[in-house]
Length: 170
Image (cartoon, rainbow, N blue to C red; front, side, top):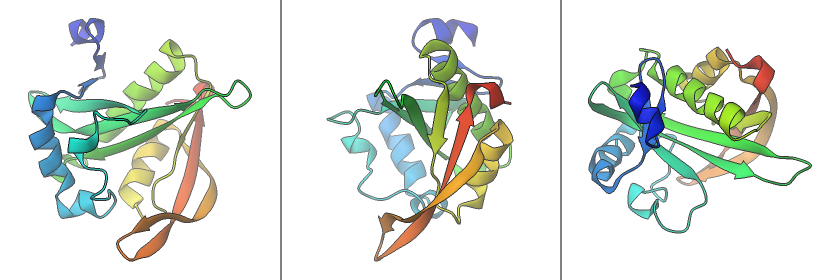
């Protein structure tokens, strides 16, 4: 796996994060359309729209030879508040195997060590227990609530803001 890190990928313990390629879109679209992912990810965030006009950097999560999901980050480059944020989805058939934690940890190390960030944020829906447990296992801690954080279907939902300092990564 170490060779992939040299050609644009990031190697974790059990996953490789590599830039999303056009050939990944069918598998990622399939994963996004599963009820367990669709509950948290909006239809408007279609993989078909990813390459155009968005400032986030996206990686396909690969476990073995299988596309397991997608993780992305965005950056705030204001010198007084420089930080990055992370979002992830994982194939529900692969939940509970530590792949999400490995992907979040791998990307966090890259953001801290290679890109120089000192703080990361993530803001899952407050009821998304799987995402909250995943992020907490890496060291993210709750710091507040965002009321009406996102519109989903015909309602809004609360978001749990979590952050992680470079010194707290597990």
